[in-house]
Image (cartoon, rainbow, N blue to C red; front, side, top):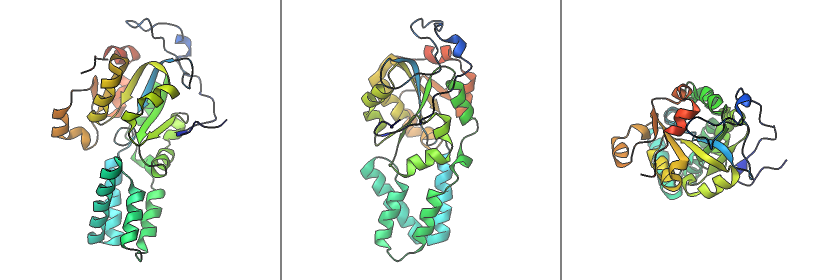
Length: 270
């Protein structure tokens, strides 16, 4: 089986879940939606598809960045690590997403004889991302898979971000359902084409993303805001966007919600 362009795809069939016996039964309050364990792909719309971000949603990317900061300080020194982060921010402004390896390539152009760049590259590529998963993140994914397909929906480059997803064990956790875009909020038509559904649930630590998608999908979308990471605690960001449909302190708290509660929380477009 060949993967769809732009999507990492598993060749393994989706496993049955404990909700198989519920297929065909309407959700109370939402008679048009019935839980189903194995949906997705182009064709007949699923009832519910769960779209889950990676960085600071499932995985503590702030700790990854802190680890890299310390590694750079040790390997290339204070002044040059400061220059790396300047390049990193410049590149993020240009691309709209974090590109750690791209910043390292640009750093190498400025310091072509710095052999430590190879050590840093190896550190990034082989970083133990599984150790940085938030507690309960895999349990949250399994919990959602009772009722529909779970899809990783992320922004990032085409090398480091997929590598992160694989090494964190998330590729296997979502049965290979991975979408990585440059600006995911601008690619919703493609998301719908690949994973048609009557209702979507988007789980993301960035209120900006949740708001942008809600403006396009309206009541077809339930937004879930795990308050993890620096973006989720920035007072200016919190003040400049409407609240999500559901706010939780940590990703593992999703296991406290049933499907009916998630669907009922969906609000109109702000």
